[in-house]
Length: 176
Length: 176
Image 1 (cartoon, helix red, strand yellow):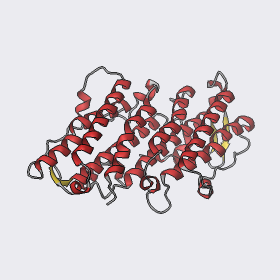
Image 2 (cartoon, one colour):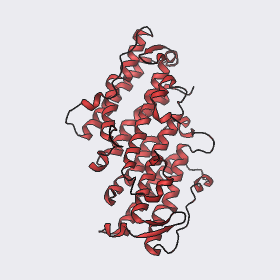
Image 3 (cartoon, chains in turn green, brown):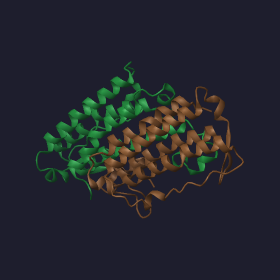
Image 4 (tube, one colour):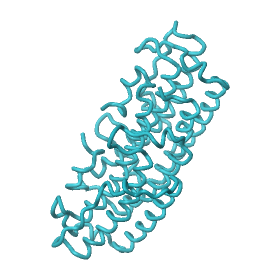
């Protein structure tokens, strides 16, 4: 196993600013693009990341530490953000993500305390997977960020699928 | 076709700082990880991007505009950076990438002038593909950045492949 809490936090802390830097000020054509019916544009991905901060990662960790593996934690609605309906700008959404992520990283540090190793093998109950460990939840939080960073790059690339002409043969990101 | 020069430049300009923000200060464990034999770690990806700035994108554009499609442009060695051998830090490499990218974007603007549409359908000769268009080269430059941003996210995620436990089922980025 490679997980170390302080290294995981390095990535968790970087995601909001990396997104801010990559997306702020982009033309609408980039921000509204997706990969077809039922897929998300970059703004919807940011909304999904906010939703995860509110109802998934940290809340589940707190639940696990409180309840152990006797009681499954509530399922996370991966599509909740699509019913958001609020009229905030992308800049506001990115700010919200940065703020709630910073708050959650602070809570994470407080929850696990000075000796995180002690907690990593503690268990909880996932509604679909059964018994899971704190380490698994926290490393998934990190990889989930990376999945969505990668998705945003893929969605942006999609827009030039036809434009790249024969070079598509060398562009792994456009392979389906 | 979706390509517009000013929108392409939006992304070309953002890549160096997005990488800087994502990679600077990360633990060696993150920076040295790769996806197995023959694959690149994040630092090698940055070196490859620098190499592309030096010998691929802008030089090929200049070559196309000068020579047309009568003469193939010199092939690009996609592995040249692996023989680099210099002992620069990641921060220095990121700085070099930012500097040469800024320079190339300035040259790009100068080369295509105030009416880029006029040039986008001009042609050159790719050593493997035959006749290619300026638009295809430039959109490939953008998508190539995105390919490597996505690759870096994937390489970082790889490190926690075992740590995520059963959640691997939900993490597309770890699907092989």
